Length: 344
Image (tube, rainbow, N blue to C red; front, side):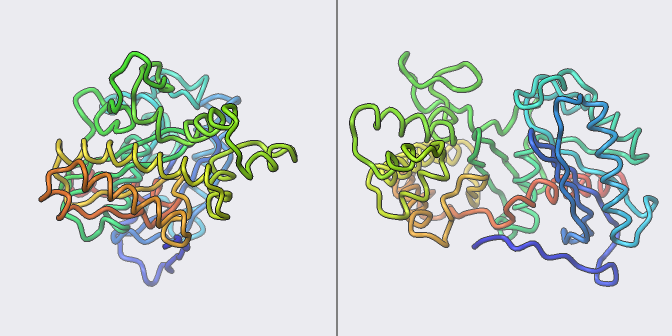
């Protein structure tokens, strides 16, 4: 079901309180969350990447003060901040290494700079991993003992949660599910990371567009041609809309994407044996609310049934995420809560 943001009052909230910060290439989402994962306040600011990381930290600090003030709390009532960012990172050292969608922010000690600016300790994580923890804590995964999450959008992100363990890996590259190999051939599609055959090269939004363009160039007929002729840019959203309206080529692309994702899910299931799999991100085709979204999930499950060990196919739940765009900041706050509880 679609996520509808709901806030609680300070009178309803249970301390301690945490701030979650979800940094994206376009926007930064920030919210105050209580000990039960319920948001009290929220804001979104433009990242303004071109102004550099120092300016970004200053604006994050201002937004953090704003969301805290909105709740009626003061900074002293906040136990910890959780920070999630995209791209490669050194989580232990708190350094952004080379995030592709944050040019100019490379090799930046973002955790410590934010901590200094806000005057609070900061727990640092990958943004997809934070979103996964949010879903595990208070979203679609809240009834699960362990969970794998795939986020579909500009890339394919991932998160692996086992009990209270968020899998980050020895080199901060754990849970990079978008970079599992699903095609080993030399002619496999090229991933944004420069390697071939990765899931991201087949199941991301740019891949959906590229595969559609290839079929159109081959002469396939589609209602998409009229929209392109009218000056619209081809996007995964446009393809989703036409699939919902009955365009055969668009639906073919959506279901092919589901097949590729299903292959990746089976690989994760055989490696981890999770209680459940959650699918989130910006490209989920309307989820349960549309015919296309229901067909997409059904096709994923069909692929899993065909390829997974029977007992895993029978017992592993597969469903859509439920927190929408709030999963990142809620999950970042949740990881801060974990760190706080371990040190208390």
